[in-house]
Image 1 (cartoon, rainbow, N blue to C red):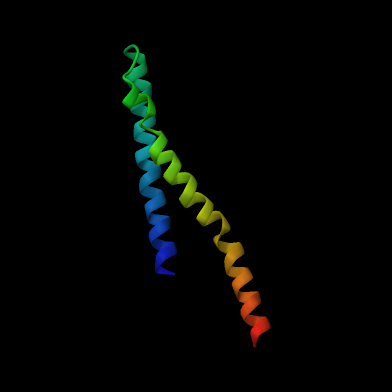
Image 2: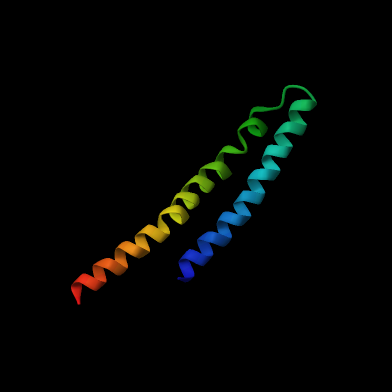
Length: 74
């Protein structure tokens, strides 16, 4: 259960980082054409959010599946 709690906390922090990079992107775009590194900076946090979000989404289903399998074994 500690791993799930850690992933959930990581997901929260990365979501804040993603929000900041998107805000920075909009601020930079309002000043003119931003450099490419600012434009693409939200992609890494977005990818991490996708991975951790999918894990957190499927976690309840995996828990039910494991509990059912353990019930069959006994």
